[in-house]
Length: 199
Image (tube, one colour):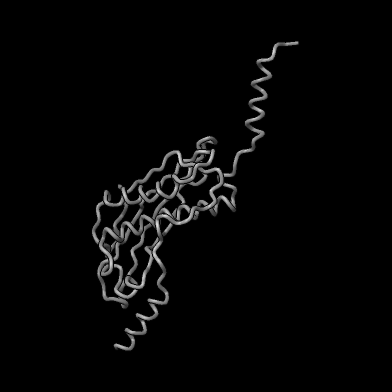
């Protein structure tokens, strides 16, 4: 039995990954600038086995992480981004290695183009897990981390995954691409023509 546990512990250490950091390098988001960021947690479902957590405990950590990641972009076009927390499971203490579930959340993401007055994404759903380190892989998240640490780690991962997904959409779908300069130039030319006296 001891040999089996040792093997499982070694495997967990090998598969563990580093924790996502709040200050990681920015992505390519084109002309993106966040006008407003919204976070809604009031209707989130607490799933079975989860540690107890109030909805209000989630709001500030997610808001802080989302603002830290998205408000560093200073593009010329404004967008609103909203994240709604739909459900969560904060891993409780369990039997290390044998039963050490990861904490997880489900969120919906909304991205609104202010100038175009349309949604680029409406209720895009994402399932996000907490990062695994060597300690949490062996001991289990419920033993290695407090509830507050689990929430903070998940909040950072939410912001990270949202930012990465938006960058993917920029690359694949052209989100946040700079508007053609001709659009603004033609508007200026038209305005100038109107002010010219008739010849």
